[in-house]
Image 1 (cartoon, one colour):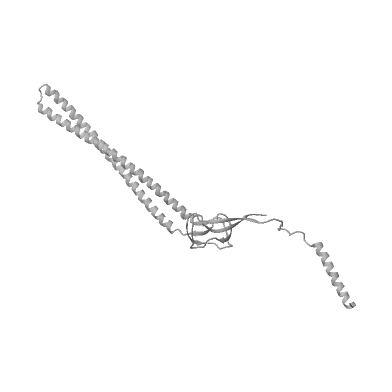
Image 2 (tube, rainbow, N blue to C red; image 1 turned 90 degrees about the horizontal axis):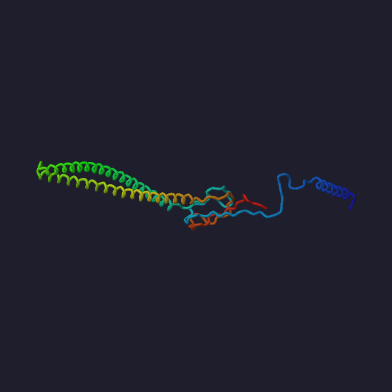
Amino acid sequence: MSKKWLYPTLGAAAVAIIAGLLWSTLRPVGLGEGFASGNGRIEATDIDVASKLPGRIANIEVKEGQFVQQGQIVARMDTQVLQAQLAQAQAQMRQAQNSQLTASAQVRLRESEKTTAEAIVRQRQSEESAAQKHYARSATLVKRNAMAQQQLDDDLARLQSAQAALAAAQSQVISAEAGIAAAQSQVIEAQSAVEATQASVERLQIDIEDSQLKAPRGGRVQYRVAEPGEVIGAGGKVLNLVDLSDVYM
């Protein structure tokens, strides 16, 4: 090799050696501030989003790879049947409530009838007492030959009539009491119907609310298990999420 090429080559080699020594001495140690390193494996929690009830998937609100928040609606089930059942249960509840009001009104009516019957009983008791006293006086006078027997017979007839009227009035009180008991039984029956239909309404409302499938935890959508329009059974999976909040190494 000629001296013409030797000197530039040696110069370039010297520069490379010096640069290498400087980099080895001055290069940063580690990953720098804000970075960390380690050995191990990354694990995350898989979460299945499933339907509590059987039915048709109406819509899926998220895409694969999308991040979702806890409580976010990720899919919706078709609730047309549930909505119709809810409307029917609400109508039945209103009917039961009206029956309860009617039965309560019947109780008040029977109680009023009983009050009237009891007033009539008191009136008939006064009449019977007066007739009894009048008959007793007449009997005394007849014994003394101070009154005709016919008058005593007439007084006895009036006494017996007063006693019959009293018995009839007392019978009306008993009838009113029976009517009250029957009306109260209808109130209890109507109240039970109200409670039963109210429970049905609340159950259907919960089922409709549960038909909006929500993310139980925040995470990323890994993949769809089913698609809109598909019919799935109770517990059928719709989405799979991966929860990255508990990632550890």
